Image 1 (tube, rainbow, N blue to C red):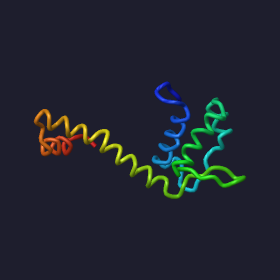
Image 2 (tube, helix red, strand yellow):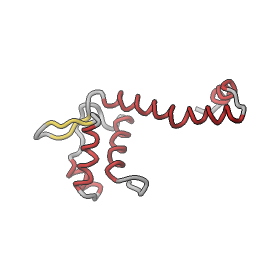
Image 3 (cartoon, helix red, strand yellow):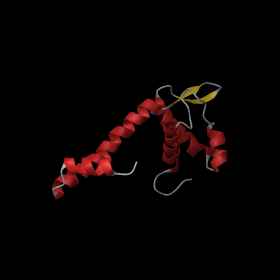
Length: 118
């Protein structure tokens, strides 16, 4: 599950975000504890805790003292909006800049997208 592209705690946080976006984790649903997560993936509990702490800091998860961690009620909506913004900044805007540089019009791009398989 984990690779060398980024720290494991970041990959944990990203994986949980993806699970929320895909619907595998529901809003207000309980998530595995950090110890369960660490045992399941055979990683250091402190690493799992760091990933979960990042998600709490970002407002994606919240703690219920003595019960566990839960997905924030608005997490999916907020994550989708952040991903949409990042998609346009990281993918669409550079693509449009490249298209302008090589003389591809927005109309040509639209026609190409309209004909693309779905």
